[in-house]
Image (cartoon, rainbow, N blue to C red):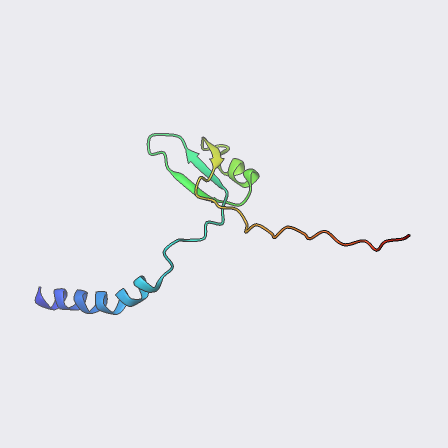
Amino acid sequence: MQKMTSAFFVAATLVMPFALAAPASADIQYPWCAQYSGRDGGRNCGFSTLEQCRATVSGIGGFCERNLFYNGPAARPAKRARKRPDND
């Protein structure tokens, strides 16, 4: 039992720096979630399009909804207006 505890401690010590170095907020890339129906239910927020989500729930039951944690693509900076030459 002592060997098992020691092995766990060594493994945890080796993995911990990598776990702490991970970014705190994940970049959510999927805007659609499938909420499955049935006794077990379940949720899958791994869909890029509404059509992908609907195809998945068709036949097994459920519905699709927007992923509330999806931030969308980064906003583009506004275009600057061009100065037009005066034609006087």
